[in-house]
Image (cartoon, rainbow, N blue to C red; front, side, top):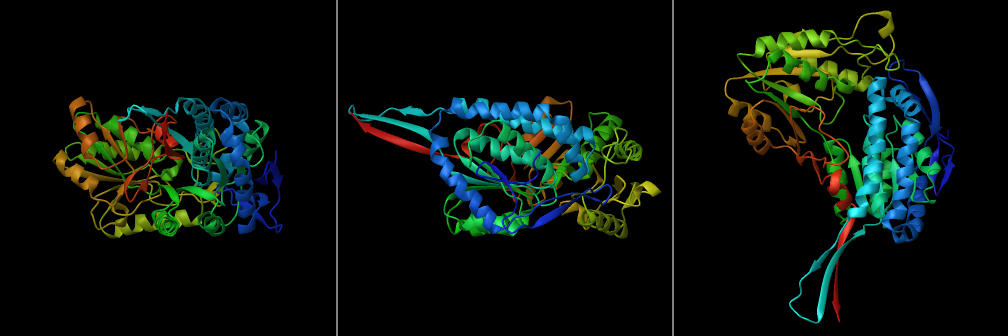
Length: 478
């Protein structure tokens, strides 16, 4: 297995020889050193992608699909090893890592199939001498920037449709979590992708972003990350009218309706909130519960949160792992302290766990809070943390108004047995992704993205292909 940069079909070291140590968040130990490139390496990768593009786009959709299918097969065959690597660098339990690995494989498989159905249109002409038609053409060289929390699935969601439609790509994994992504690139290499079609550069984010924005061969940038960074990329790329897809932050409401069982609702809420310790862009972060059901919901949520077994993700007995780094833990502790200082009650968790096994690593207990007010920071800023705040409501329309009272609009969740109410809330909630009795709504075949400050454009589904194409119009006089 090669843990190196991948440029022009070859695994290589950084041009200046620099390396970076990757830390296991459960132990704070360095897992391995990897090459850590610079802007010069990014430039080499984009040049390789530009050289490879004419031949790659000239292939038929069927020819491009074959190595993508093979890559999906290889990822699945190596899923156990890849998942173990992912757990050591991210911290999530092994079962979650395996699920993410298989989700990445599904991206390559689905887009290998979907690209064969990219149809154009025959447009009726006003003149009998003309024939008018449109078709979708690949946009060109693309840059893919993935975050640390779901490094495989989010990178695959960008790379797979780009390659399938005929673009070439350069990916940049997060500096903290490049290892499992490098293993996926071993799969792409072994699948027989031509040199230069899919490159990988681990380097400082500013180096990669500067090169992607300023290099004229780059036609499209796809970024998943924070709102401030997304806004900066949008402003800078706009100077060159460079195309962007931005999947940014969220502050997802979770509305429990009065026709569901509060204990079952609490169990579902806890399962959704503490996946990857709340470090999920679509993680529910504000839980609206009918006031008459709130005490029972809170008691069940606290009990379920306290039952979560914290431990190293490689231990099959662990339900949840650590936070990703010291900064994440410090921000979690600050959010809890702020809420408590302003009147919140801690029903479960709220601190670092006790015990020698938690002396190393970035641990924090799953936390349930009650007595929330608008003044608390956790209610207005995205909490990338294992905190479940409960807000009681009297009228459903008030819960919807509070749910929409945020600059974010990535995801929203509703628990109800009333079909009419489900449709109404699906229409009223201001979010790009809405799960009705479903807390894991993302999949390869559906669009993923947000409204308002949560992003621009969509990844996944048919929209994921369109994001890497231009519509071309052909007018023929016969």
